[in-house]
Length: 288
Ligand SMILES: [Zn+2]
Ligand SMILES: [Zn+2]
Image 1 (cartoon, rainbow, N blue to C red):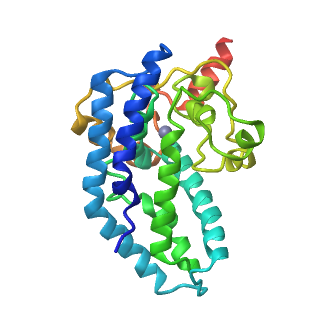
Image 2 (image 1 turned 45 degrees about the vertical axis):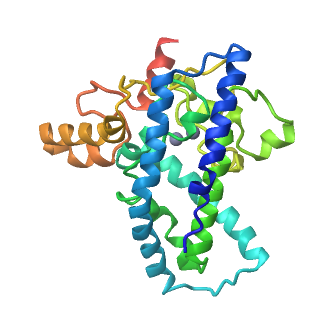
């Protein structure tokens, strides 16, 4: 019943990862590290595995809301066009929230936990996003009347689009393309741990949302990738759960700050021992 584009695309993922390894070696771009790439692939496979279970939950939630739909939207071309923009707009806000609210970050951090930027990193996906409710951002779409099946398909297309932009092999594309679409250059900035690049370029397919809502930063010098504080592990289970565990530890130690530690920005701490990206930015400004 489900249009399983992601599973169908696995052979293509494998092919392009192998091709990139060869091309990178040839162009002397040192972006692959065997252990890191293997853990990224393990995260991707785990995501597909967990997805088999959580897809039912998510689709059920969409169907439930769809019962109360406001409009009757048939499978016609303009429905797909509207859905493309509505889905991409929703992805932008989901993704921006995943970087500013620790509860969602705990799942999304997985995708940012590699210090390398390559096509294997694209496969480094969350195991917990589905079951912890990242899909709530999308519930307004079936409520409007977009068929849940069409929505799930559009989300897969968006995810597939985001695969190829995880590469250092492509520097810049034609200006008009860089203006409208998310590209390797824009997404390299998104994966950077450099303070000047933090919390930028949350786009899925269209970069226009970042330009519209003030989160666009162009790529200037070559970014450093990963987290501001890297986790130094290749263990998939630890990659999938480390931030959840840290939230648990923080709340157990400081129950007074339950809400801030769960729903505050990533890096928030009651005693300043860790820093949010806004604090890191302010710090850099004051020392500059
Ligand atoms: Zn992100
Ligand atoms: Zn990415």
